[in-house]
Image (tube, rainbow, N blue to C red; front, side, top):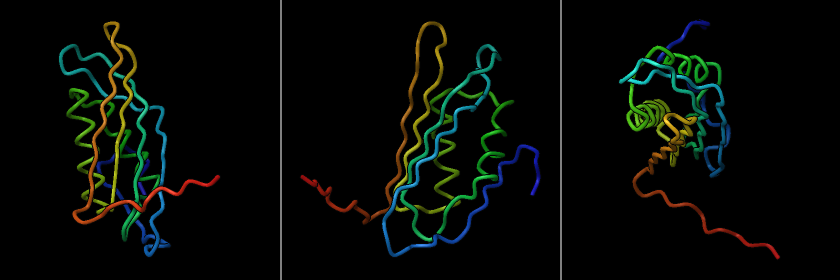
Length: 129
């Protein structure tokens, strides 16, 4: 596997496809470029998903995130691009990408994009006393 930035997302078989479980990943070193100024934008990306048959492989995810560092895009566009690419690669039951961009011009921006597989609903929440 390459150690260069790459848009290729690798996957592996879900070890427990019969069960809903949540994967949470925190990616604190995301960078891209502001399309207006060319200045770097920094963000923490949170990825939460319920896999179906495939899970994303972590090194390929790291290299994928790294591939944005020289790409200019608005926060809204880049967050949705990440979601679209990950959904295409893994076909999850549910996925949410939350991008928390650091302050720019005195404004913090958080973009949340979600995907739900048609017909999938989470199990009812269990409250334990």
